[in-house]
Length: 334
Image (cartoon, rainbow, N blue to C red; front, side, top):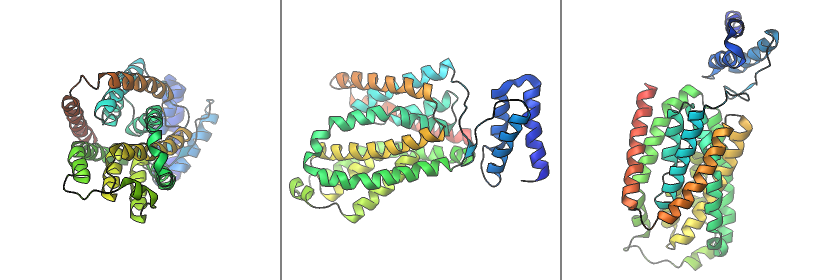
């Protein structure tokens, strides 16, 4: 880091503090200095750390992967409300049609969270719902415990790799990538039923699920699950569709057993990603806790309403939100 850059960073921090902007605003000025990561960002973070002490303020946290960690501004009441309401609706639609992440992520970004923080917060907030789904299908894993055990390893490793890749992605780069992730996940959501018809199709030969479960999963399936885990740890929307398609192509026909393995793999991916995000410090915990409550309530209401609400109407609304959000995020990144 050049001497002029050092001096500039130090003066930005001190002037922000001395101008009465306060500790949080001063830290924000310093954070913007290194928000894009890249060469020298760790030096810049260390400089900010030292400058805080010399300026008489509390020391801000150091950086990980180009992102300042630790002290974050308190969420506004609007962010808490938007997060809880979005999670409630997401839990409702997940119980009926799936695709809840396509609602929570853009809602958090629209409420003012950065895409990185929104992604991490949404992953952590929806973990209780993933756990409840996994527990609800635990009986379906009774006959495929070998598959479940072997499925766990690439899911955990992939989820960890994806989360670390996200934490190593600069805010500016993620802003450019995320519209395509949202649009891609929406496309997967729209293709969910054709894919399921393809992998379960009436023209396909009938397989014996019990005989298939007695065998070990193929290396190709485990490699594919590793790739799904990496994507899931990085962003996550649509991983269930990918896992169901892979299991169907392997020969499974029992959708309940497939859902059991899918929910188990998804939980493994999300739990390791959630731990990584929690340790990194980018999770907005008040928002996440409100969302967790909202998702549980929404899931309960959705389960009760599943027989009375048209799946086609819900799926159409989710697809519309996904496409509109992707286009809005794309315009926002230009």
